[in-house]
Length: 229
Image 1 (spheres, rainbow, N blue to C red):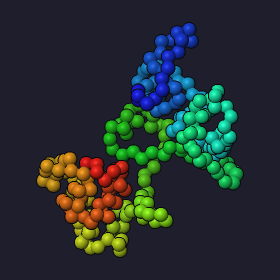
Image 2: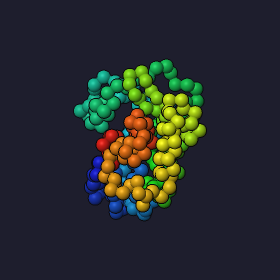
Image 3: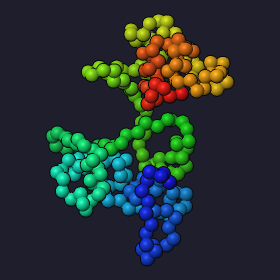
Image 4: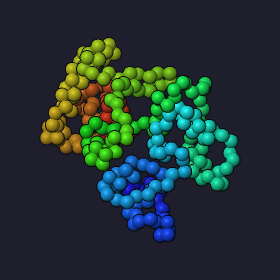
């Protein structure tokens, strides 16, 4: 169980049977533990499942917003709601919910996950994947400066159609893409560069322009810093 997830123990008199784990707020770990054969109980102060990771209908998201944008009132009796108001400091909406609003779902915390890796295996093996919706990432853009959002090419065709990238940089990009799409662990390009910041690796090994290298670091590798290896 994640160390960030609050836990508590029920008094023995309230336990109908031995419980292996108690979880406050619903989370994927609840379903995973139950699927693994553990007896679990969860407690949630909300009238919906999922806590801060929930997916709500339009009507539910309006109610959610109203509670968190309301004036200070019952914080002494509802610490969870007080914490939510401190976290979501600006919550507003305009207009009214559309007809058949339950046909629409809005995630409170959309997440990007790799399409291959241990997380995917865990979601499938635990059965939790049946309770989620997954969609391929269609477009990525970078916020360069106030009022400037730059779309990132998402295919080889888009790269060669892009007029802002020079022909020589397109060739360097193709060399880099060929490198990362292969088994590159033993390639000479990585020799003695395992701890090199990714941005420096791109500019020194593949001689990519700084702006193009930064785009790869943030938009493709989803790094949070230019200094990460």
